Image (cartoon, rainbow, N blue to C red; front, side, top):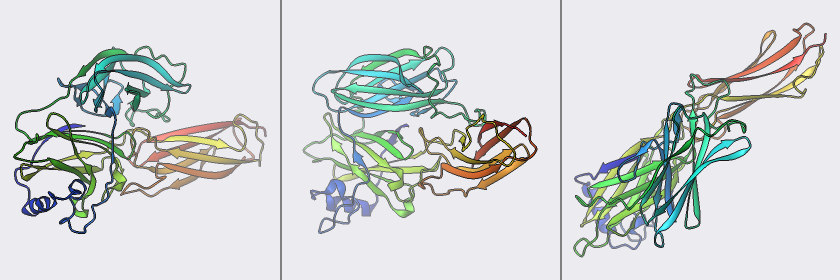
Length: 421
């Protein structure tokens, strides 16, 4: 997501007093939650600072005139004709060559699509585009950005909506190694200087946020708040929560950059926030507070985690190899695994697993719905059972396993055995 948020007009009196008390503290940047300096320790930060020549790398359908991504997402429908990767740069030692390389992820490993080169400068933007005249091939992809000896990657996927996907469809499943990849070709690429808004100082904040994993958020925030002899040193912090009534966690301290920008580049886990949740669609709120010209400027925004997009993947294995002839009374141990692919985002969890044979239902297992999220294993369930070959059966015994998730998407798999009466 890319957002521009405006500063609140009047911070609360209590908040202003707190910031004035902290203004002279050496720990002001990490003690926003303290009532004063004294002996109060600064709260621990839940975010880690992202440093280096590449501060953020995201994918989006397009960019604006200054190279900022529009509609940041890792999920693209089959109807998408273009995907743009955007890199936000940090400090560089002079102009550098950046290489952005695109891959399709296949069962044989990453398959090179193309590379694009460009000359970049400190705190600028660079972008590269993959295009397709028709519909982009379904599957998982990756793009990397390399500069000054550092490489960052971001994964994205072309997915089928869960209601129309095949039983085993998953954006996390690698494409077959033999599938053609030529339709995806290079599109526009460019390197742009640092985007700076020099009108109305400290009134607007730019935010780029993305989720490189199902629970981690990469956050890039910046505002034009120039220092002067009159306003002193500018300070700022970033706070986040998933429930304002349960408080806010300190993500980290902002830093001053050349040209009057104050910025922060962080990674934090949503499960570390108050009332943290990774359930699809859950929302988190971020507040940036900047001390500027003797007062605080507060910027806020809210964002949602990716929604549920894909159905379950089902695998079935047996103690007797599929295709092996079986006889009446023979016992076959079965193991059914149902997983919610979360390579590109958290999923709501498995509702049930159902196993059926020639005579109908063999066994069904139901699971509870997870309401709060951040619970391990809700996206992966295993059912084990023993099937006894009946005395009378078709020439080929087919055992099928199906699974539903909580929104109702389904997946399935089957195995067969020749029957010898």
